[in-house]
View (tube, helix red, strand yellow):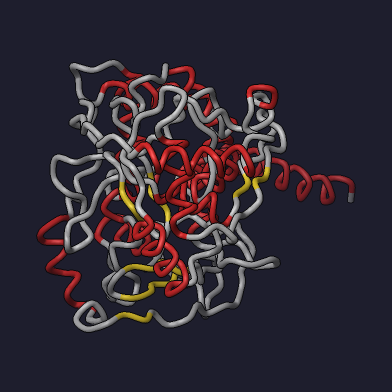
Length: 416
């Protein structure tokens, strides 16, 4: 009888020993997929705004001129998510922008970047998504005007703009540079927000990563330009910003805050250094000489700054609040992020490495002229130099924020 009992035990042990390498490989694949999904901002883009929203269940709105697109549910729910998808169907969606049912996805879902992922990485992301909690939730229907509401038209977009060739390393570059290029142009999809778009919402040729206004925020210039790009930043300062959301040149705010908190601050140091190496190697965008502001506007702006801003932004508080002198965001060629921060207030990123950050109050009481004057003063003081801001610039931003209800401060670049 002892032998009869022993055989099942030995059999179970042998089966466990045989399966353990497979389970270990599966665990490594899921861990790899979790990391790639973190780098790709998946949880940010596929979680609708508001407290208590289920992660990865979709519903985040992307606003653009043709209307609003909502991100899809990518939990393994079989009715409303991707629970019935195969790994091949997921690969096709990531590389060709075609869903399991054959529908064309809108390029607001950045498959033009995800196409650079190799098959193993795409499979790893799918394996990870299969482990998240299934959520039964159907995002709202897209609200798009004609002809953008015709999905079949995306076949033409793909023919014009989609390069589905996976990333290939440049043998003339270092391993670090190639890793950075792979992250920035692929799963990191930095250009989805930071590259200017043409009339069909594809990246403008030759303007890669030179800044773009999207979803109510201006994503700044990432080329080594001065003063509005990364020309004055060292590689270590780029890493510091991505890890903590701040450095001596800028503090994260608006849509970049979530990217730092949920994505870049959780990346490995080696990957952050690789991104920095790649960005520093890019050709700088062409310099644009700004017009000098009027003396009266600078005087009026200084009066507002002394009254409302100097208490926090003085030299005595520079360690606690952003320094405005030589600030890259402040000197951006597009002032709308600065204007929105003053108008609506903002919170900087809170990370383990950088602490809880800070909050800035809103100043909606400022008139269009007052906001333009103080922004112009900030952009042209303490060694700063940038284009003056007009009252009409402020009015246009107010109208855009009001009409599209873009007050969530969430990251754009989502949608299916």
